[in-house]
Length: 152
Image 1 (cartoon, rainbow, N blue to C red):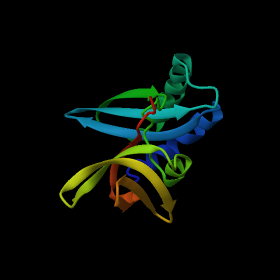
Image 2 (cartoon, rainbow, N blue to C red):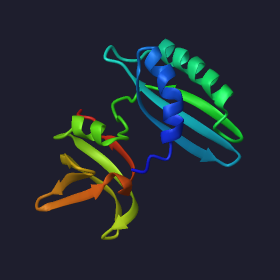
Image 3 (tube, rainbow, N blue to C red):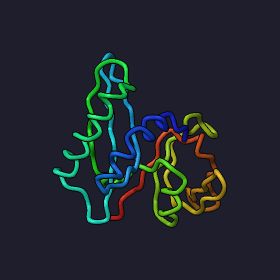
Image 4 (cartoon, one colour):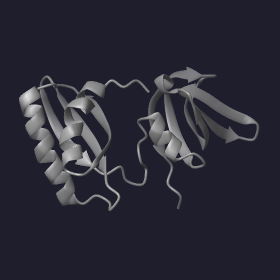
């Protein structure tokens, strides 16, 4: 998964850390002339609406000073929720044995979308069991988006 937002994450992480939260990841979604900046935060005690509002105020102040985003955008701060997005190898490693939903940048054997059990994370690659005798091994750079599939 290309870390396109790495500079932005480095910019806002200190403010989020100072408030006692973990920065899970950042998504920047273009919507024409207006874009959405979605920041996912977490905490061992969970996330409340007030937590999101506090982080939003702090991050807004940083973004106002640094001005890294051109044009208009909406800032959204959220918990990762049950369909937790996965942004890093470390995050994938925490969830070995669980079901994941992965979308690749480029098709593999005609498919870009895969669901299955996360079997391993080694070096820069992860392996997902897709079914009997079928698995996918890909690098983080191959991944467009990934998330956990909740257990119901």
